[in-house]
Length: 263
Image 1 (spheres, rainbow, N blue to C red):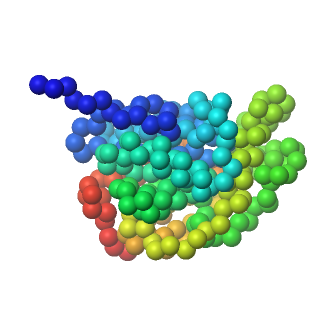
Image 2: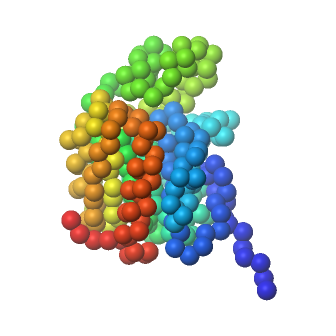
């Protein structure tokens, strides 16, 4: 008997995926601006047995800190689509928070343009609909102090990190690149995705008001669901169990290879 083939590897994944048994889904998780794959550390242990959490590492972040960060969305999405191709050989879904939500959405559209398999489900979190106008100031070319002020407004960055000059000097180039990804993005109309979608929002998020989440419904012809959770822009850190429960429920409702249709 021949041994089972080893799982495919991807430069974009923090860890090599495991060989999946039938019925399991890879949940490819994309980070927020300035974040690394490590922010999803611990999710795998809490996830449903049917879900394999696969954190995505962006160039210039975390384990890829030695690489140059990408400052425009379209080349970053094209790179990720190519890097992730080897691990899209099994049923998969995307989860992204804030900048990661926009990357996940555009990755779905890029895969469709390439004629590749599309995800079972798209989970977007802490992000306004992609065609919504920006409401926050443009800061990718602002002063260091203005960048830090925006981070303080958003929350989620420990004050001791913001006050550490050496660490901030190390992080600022990556932060500026990430903010540039968001601030130079121009939405291009395309047909709605045929992928079911779940939209997570923080009830007290100062930068993404709950009403800004409803526009996501227009981006899919399949089922769309909105989940409001307690907390500010970084509500996901305190709501991991709730998010993963919703993920398992949504994936359990979506037949493999046949995205659910409906309102």
